[in-house]
Image (cartoon, rainbow, N blue to C red):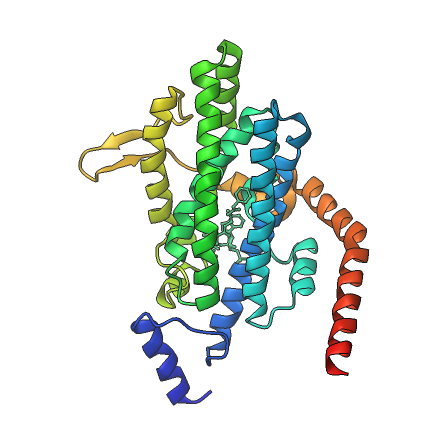
Length: 312
Ligand code: FAQ
């Protein structure tokens, strides 16, 4: 690395010029991007599992079509993101293997079970809602392919969030007491894990400061979490359901909602492999790898033959 190269990189970051795959970049920047982008990709793919659990039990054809389209979108998001990681030299199978071996993470939220139909609405409203808040900021991330992937992903996540909220609105406004109770039970289980999606407090965020300096992350974990809470409380009021946090209250001085303490012990347990569904999720991904091997092999063989024919 020459000083001139580093200076050029820092100058681009300073002027908000995107870093592109062929540009010189510090090795630590490249590694941190591979870490974050591939974890993000894994989250999209593992995130398909809790919803797939309800596909065969959707209450109507309309709901089933929406859910199927959403799950397929998540697969697409995973693919854009694996491609973005590949532009940095991360071989796709190697990053997938790293996840299966527990060396690369995926979002903690997908290690919780989906017990009722209301959970399909709750995932759309809260999980996709939290993902959008995070990803809108990532549209301005400093690495070009990641930023561009985020633009399209955010548009689709917005549909996901709305279908979830619409599903819940129907359950609480047109449903019976049992259906309304199902929505309340669902938010009781999903509220705190949704707040954990934003990661540890900034003071405990190992990568945060450097990622913000490199403009990989544009906002800190706490600021994003607060934005999400501020948006979501009003939406919960409209649904007439209770957010399970007795300390949640509007703070006139700060212009934000204060919230109670997050259970970081639970978070650590889930990200280190001991959440309610970690084993089930990884078993399902391993099985998919095994059963899908022939598809990958057939695709690669087709591609090799096509390239040979073109070269001939
Ligand atoms: N779960 O130093 P920081 C979606 C890890 S979107 C698991 O603050 P960083 C859409 C973190 O990796 C959900 N691990 O880390 C969808 C780090 O460990 P490492 C995915 C977590 O990177 C909806 C350590 O803790 N979205 O799924 C979590 O600066 C519905 C210390 O943390 C993204 O990935 C967590 N919640 O900030 C799909 C967005 N939080 O890597 C299907 C992109 C933290 O050093 C259905 N990622 N960790 O071993 C990001 O914005 C960042 O990576 C953060 C973490 C904000 C997640």
